[in-house]
Image (cartoon, rainbow, N blue to C red):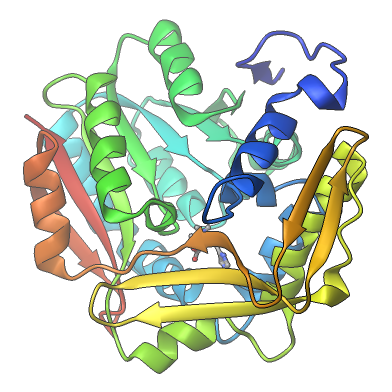
Length: 329
Ligand code: AVJ
């Protein structure tokens, strides 16, 4: 099957006019320097993230895997009960190793559905299109490569069935609380009353457990963060020297905000292409990513504020993670 790109055919733009360049320069010239975590996921970043998911400190994947592998019958039953007939759209599908359990269960139950995996990484979508049909014979699949809402709009044009949206892996954590509200509100506008959303939330727990998940002893998370600087060097002709930065993850148990920074180890100047110069002061922080943690009350509140009604919740044994099923009202 063919991957449908959601943007126009890739025109060969000069780095200095690309969206990537624009976003990077905007972030690095802000008073609090930042980069958008969606840019972590180039080919090397995809591999590093796969390795993060296998780190024993990074418990999130194991917890959600436990939910999907042991409770897919219950989840499928809930989807069928609340939605009847539907198509399945997954935002940020990754390698689908978790959702595959649910996909299989729905096939076993004889549900006639199309699976629309959406991912920002074209590599990921190509892999899925190659591998999933082998693992799940009979699966109807249409990959969509691009930003969530662009791709969702495409999915809306391709199907008139009710929709079940999967937004797993605690991807929602990459938004701060205000941005998560915004995101859910926007998502709701692409959906109809009665459509469903299954979202994964990483729950608040002992702060050290959370901090360790973003500071693995083998340094894969550090490499994952540094990879974005390497990507900027490669694609935008910059000269970041990663040995002059230190990976610095933080967790605030009060707010549930887990934020990663890169700290500049000295006064330094970084060039991006010919025309842009960025200065870092010693100890200046470059904000890379938030991974927001939630309480159950906070997930309910998020639903209530954005046009959804919580209808079911699924947990791992430790109750470290939850997949929440929300219905559009
Ligand atoms: C893919 C956003 C869920 O925040 O836990 C993992 C990304 N960053 N380790 C997360 C990530 C560093 C991950 N999400």
